[in-house]
Figure 1 (cartoon, rainbow, N blue to C red):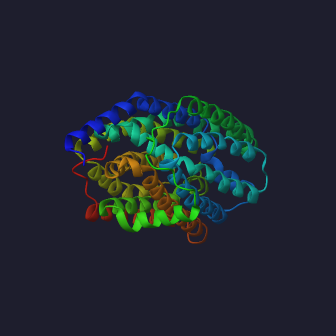
Figure 2: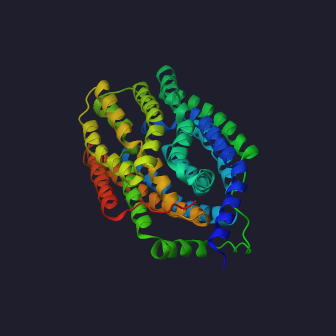
Figure 3: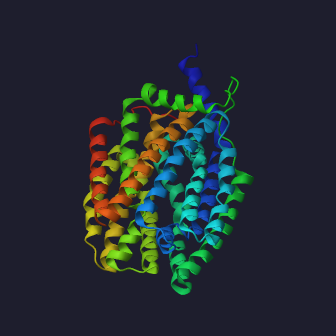
Length: 418
């Protein structure tokens, strides 16, 4: 049996082995994410283009729901691969896989084929558990929120300009031709973003003393079922459930912000692109200070405050009837909600042993996928058949439920996992 001293030496030795390249891994992921964000011209405008070529809000929600359900399977497999076969290979595969879809979006004219492509694009989420695991492996536990916040800021900073560029192309060349031009530009930059990952990313999974298990989808899915129902701490289960509610809330409105802004408020695509750019700029300014606050005063407290402030803010958005009012509401939403995700990810890492992070992240993402599928379906149905404000009311109710879970059932650990 190992003594406490031996365990400490083992942890220190492992930390020294990992630290030689962990900081480089974070830099590589940040660089790749930044280049990819620079090419994120089309995502904001997919709902408008989908409706333009013959779709409607309900079918948009159906395809978004199907894409989320696909993730139920890809994330299960991705978590298994991350913990038993390594993180790097999966990340590299997904990086190059994403190149094809903007190119296909540029040539497809049928809304049914276009929707099917958005579903197939979701297969790239097989790398999500590996990305989260390799980041958690590479950031010191005492600075985890700050490290994740810094990574997210660097990765997303180019989004300050990319939606506006997409909006400018649509404003000057029309929705159809402008969207296609943006797609080609996106494909080029996504390919460029995959190169640093392929060349420089290093594996963080330590070799196991036992043989790797045979790959069986049945064993993978049953393994996640046992993990969810048995061994997880109650705080971690409640934490993941609260995030699932947040994911449901965001998915109920994600596709419909731009449709609400255009059909109810009367904004143009370029107007909305400017709104999104301002949101990213504010998020970049606030996320790192928010990470410091989370590490200093408690992640759970920051998450709770974030949820409670977003509830009245989303209702303010539904009352907007001008560009200025939309800008104010959109920026308040960012100011309220930007702290939640990095604090959540850091708290989950604090509660999860290194050897299980791939599977726990996959389990988290699986729950999110199911929640997102339900949210997209509910959002599309209510937007089209009940009223365009109803998805936003649903958002508020789900956020309140998540806040109650955090208050009653989640506690931060006294000893953080490294």
